[in-house]
Image 1 (cartoon, chains in turn purple, blue):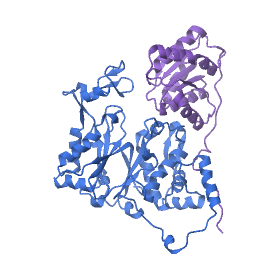
Image 2 (cartoon, chains in turn blue, yellow):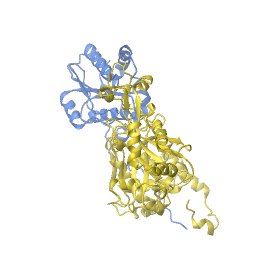
Image 3 (cartoon, chains in turn purple, yellow):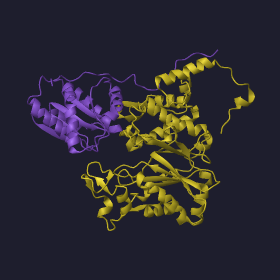
Image 4 (cartoon, one colour):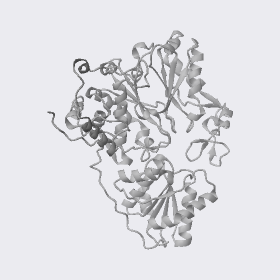
Length: 179
Length: 372
């Protein structure tokens, strides 16, 4: 009779560390510097600037600084991450509206949270599952991010503004401040 | 096709079919498959794979940093066993991973992308005959264990090790059938030209795996001509299609059948002659690109779009002496040529090699089977 053996796990995931601790939330956004991380996808800059302007007008947020990623498909470089962590108090990053960039946007959010910066990652809702899968492989399965209605790339300025206004309650909730 | 001698000598084995199905269902439930049944992989069986390569099982072959995942020799072996490889195929799987690891796009997230590309492997050298890799008929089709399972070993590890499950981390809008398995061998014996791997400086007696990232395989139906120029232009027409263009350029692997290769060789064309001819003729009129709204580039992403778009900037050809002639290929060397298929008809193929910006002079990577 043949000997019995266990089937092997083909994933190699058991050595992945789990760290799903959010950075400390601010009591209020008053005077805080907002980092806007643009992944270069169409309409990202406009969406981010509109959200920042809402945070400034209605929640007393301070200066907004715009940063641009080298490549949308992979997470932010170490040097840019460090610079943003040095210069900003909270971060908004957008827009993950493709396969690789949706996952990268979520990975960016997790990296900022682990570096102590409250962050709102924005994907489009077509890529919700990609963002969730990235959170899983990053050892942060419940990571909360915002999924804006798809598509983003083809919108007019007025439509982008409307998307930004719709996002505000979730942006505030993720940052942990009262709307 | 290789046939086990067991089948001829003994009656079919008796099995506990419920138990077999239970094992297969376990794999499906764990989502450790491409949708097809997998071969159960246990320590003793995987050890047979590891024994074919003198490598540390914990050696890392390929890392996708941003996914926080690494493929070790051992994980490559487990997935090769599950894919249905025989242990003696494993040196080819290992070389394939080494080649893939040298490619720029897989490590940068291309297999999560909506673009929907697949790994595509070409095997050269004596290993083809040793393990029964098909190079002569139905090369892109089914029916050959070595081809089918070596390609599948890559896919299963993509799913299992890198978590590239469709609808999750793999967001391919459509993908390609090549995502199940894509491994072909060169028909070196019926080629008038030196085999692919000798172009990189290897000997014919070396076995080498070349890895590409591809999207489409397009057939070139041309049984009618003995004119090398006519035949080459038939290839060109498919290569320069506007649908291929993401950024400015495309790249191609010409998989030429022996009959077509003989037409070129009889006219005295070397591979470089064919390459240069294709390079020269793979152009579009600017008006063709205007018609499909791809006559300019996005300033931000450098994707092709219409010159009427607010984000547009002129493409490279616009600044040349002939702004109305737009090249589809950036370098002659980004056209690769190999011979494969049956010697029974004039039906070749163009494999569209995925091309981002900047275009690559040599859009492939390779590794020798069995190391240096």
